[in-house]
Length: 572
Image 1: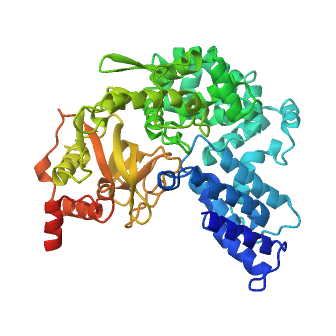
Image 2: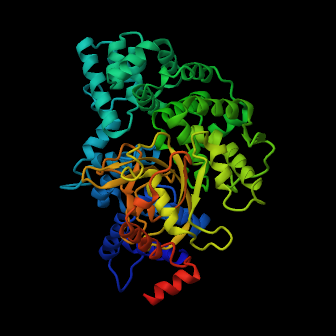
Image 3: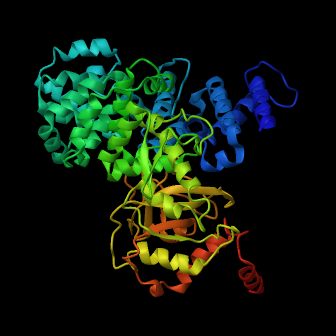
């Protein structure tokens, strides 16, 4: 890695004219570096993947710093088309954390405004991204600044305000990004019209009714945390209303508690260190709460081995929002979370250490506060299962994630030897539990924790990873697909042997990843199920199971075949 970095830095010196080389011209070096940047743009956006974390450790941050350095000096205009394509691919997944994307769009805007840079045919679609951030409506088209825009609103009539509200809502829902001007309009409309407020949030009938039913609460939330520095709170609030979760009796009181929550000094300092002091820690945390409740599948684990904790936060926001709010209150106010394991309390204060060796910092506001506590509790649950036979997730997952996690448990790897174990029965059971053709067409009711064997683009085994099964259904091309949540920041991953995870275009909702059922089954190693709702094991066709088995044996299972199975394979 060091040699590669030095090589590219030497080429940068040649490309910029700082060093003359007899074998390569400045133009050749420049062209080479632009090609390198174009095929590695993901390094500008995302935290390291599971594969990078496992194989490179702390070194995984070096390529990212290198490519930021190279791109700033070579110029974004040379990779503008690839940059725009990558931005849209990330935005299709609707992550909560969008600061990196906003920085890239800012660079595109700088390129557009530089008279010395001619983009030509490049940059198609750039205007859509730039305008969404810096000028989505007529009132702020030329990016006049927040103060000037606030003054303009006072002179607008109802028709003009309607146009502003519609323009902001369209840009926000189109991209998942919120302009700093949008909160200015929202706060102005609090004293004007609830009708215009619903227009500015882009609400359907469901969201509109929810806002009107809980009008005082929504107004209080906007006043408390919707500022230009916390603009993404607008999108989180809009999606929260669209989900209708305020109609659950406990959610509105829990949000009222959150509004008045006194943060501990540790929570305040942690939020300030990680996210800056331009906005109060309380407003920053409330922004995070709204975004997590509105975008439960947008939670990312950052560059940390805390997929279990990120999955838990996502699952609670998705399935049990008032429980999530309780966790936030405990962690932010009391600096302690207590979760019971088989009737015995586990305190995050008393648990000495978790899976993460360092305190995670590259997270959304809620995760910043809650994940360190959850990580220690999860690790302590695992320690209490050390002496038990089998995989500890059998007992830990239902206690850690919630009652809806099935008490039935299957694993296809022998914990002691690491060899594949009872694979045919494992696959038949998974099909019978989750495939609509074999489980009586029963849809998945609650999200379920599951574990996958992560592989890299060469189908080599990397490690075990926690995901959430969300639903199984037919996609637009009549292919049965598994739709799941992956906490690993970017779900669009190449797992080798032709298996590439899809995030859009195959019936995915925002934040979902998906694979055809067979391909997903080939990377699954743990799943939970309700033991009282068994499907038909015997009806799964053997040729279908053979295809899945072949995918396993060509990837992460290649070195895990039991001796008898290996001999049979060699004999064939």
